[in-house]
View 1: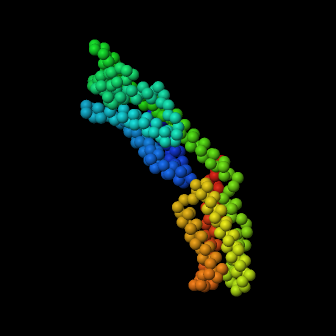
View 2: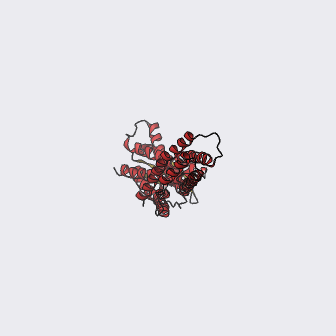
View 3: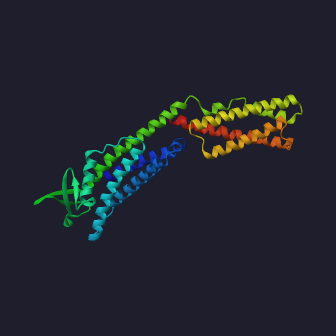
Length: 315
């Protein structure tokens, strides 16, 4: 039961890490270092795979077949070993100092003695030759005979349940360090922008701007056209501020960037029409572009609201 509880807790912590790295504002930074990104992803996968193996071992019946007994024994020890390596490399990727507890070091040495380097193991200046007692092999562990000098043998009992739970508790502590650092980075990011919501960039006079642009299109007065062009510039300035703000927050994903590029294209077209340098565009074309700007404006305001709401939730 304890093993299951500990595994569930670690899985929840890994999900919090995955949620962080898959959030665009953080992912865009992490992806700049592809080696580190791959180390993070590989480590998370190995953590998950190792936990699946460990959980299945503790749920399954121990086989009667001698060969499978060895496969099961080798497998669970290797899963414990890989889990340690994965958490160490994950910590390294997030620039967190990994300090394995004595419990983890003991489990690691036990794995090395039993299945890592049993035929010739050098440990702390001493050489060992190790033997798994075949008769002692059960689901709960085995006895390991160790020879370090002529005529001297030591017996070590390996308790899988105890070793697994001790390791999972130590791994939980390491994962909590990682999760805490990422949560703090998230809070710092939110704090930086909490007083400058994106929605505020779209001032209340945006509707007025669109009306003046419409007047410039539908009027043949040079004054109205110039006034319309002035308000096209105001719309462009607003959207340049919006794009810059998204970039500063690392919130400009490829979809929004594509939509913004289309929006700026429409602005340029209308600007050229009102200035009189677009000889092929007709009034009807200009009205279509303006309708596009009005309709898409609501789309971008909604994006701003959703991002602002996310930041408020995380405060």
